[in-house]
Image (cartoon, rainbow, N blue to C red; front, side):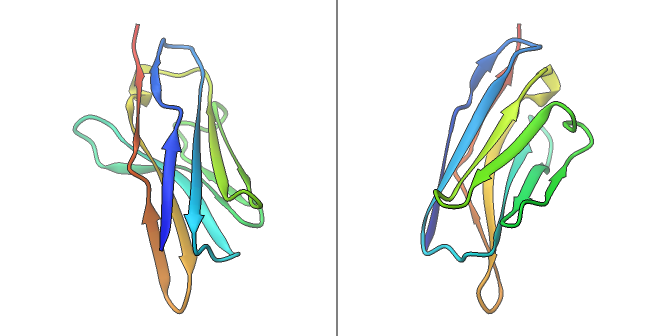
Length: 118
């Protein structure tokens, strides 16, 4: 079993910054991908950024240049630095871990609320 715990959400003004963190615990395979997803009000869940164990990254077009994903493989943590936040970034942000153990396994955190408002 794998558990994911997010932290760092909150209320921030437009143009501000916030950093989200996620720690994975449990039986974690060495090769995996950790990512951040978000679900805004009335919207579906979308990928924000992902990072594989080897360091390759993927960003949504809407956040590229403003958000940075990083991870500490030894600590099984992934962070999302968010800068120049916009009201449309308001969403519940979820951490996800994807790994392979005879088949693909997906684990999700409980989510953390990010609200961008003046």
